Length: 264
Image (cartoon, rainbow, N blue to C red; front, side, top):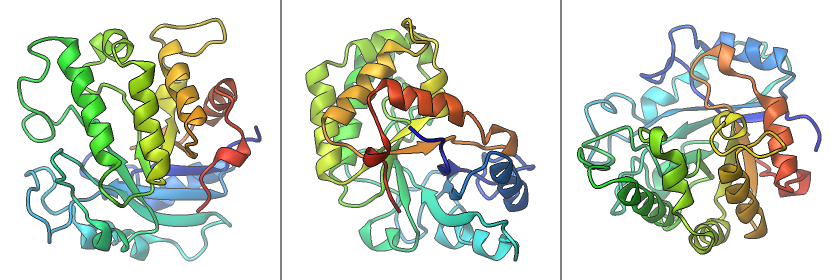
């Protein structure tokens, strides 16, 4: 596979969790140094028109996220800029965007596993009964995400955020049949799957080629299920706009080539 030239998952300081140094200008400069041709800004968003936001999301609405357009410099060094967002999904069909509002952006990223947001995305006591409950909810939420009827891609698939100490047990308990069901549903819904820095650099259950067997299996099943893919650093600081060489090698190890990449 050729070098990666597109990162669709970059956060700026418009996101509450973005580092103060993550200005539009600094992110574009970092992208230029990495020889990117396209950058996708994907700040967190919950539309003010929709109920259910958490205090953390308050103020991070569509109008706020689209402020980035006014911050773009006149000369962006030949880098193509896409203004998207990463919204939120908390289950039972409740999402920070809907199909109509999603059209405000060039692309929309959907997370099915923001399990670090206890008491909002997941119950406070998730995990009290062990890793199995976490894996079951990961599977359920992924399937529900494919039923929302909008979105461009699913980010950091199945990474058990906030439960990484159980990572091997959680992902190991999700069967190949379940993964296949999820990824076939994603392919049918035309939701691409993200390959990100964490996935490529993961050290849990390493195999001889230097990648985690957990994530190799998962993404290989996604490929076999007909999914499209995109690359995302999930950077919250300009210094984290990197890791592309490792990601492209990971993609190759999964049998993913240029014909399987999302085109926007």
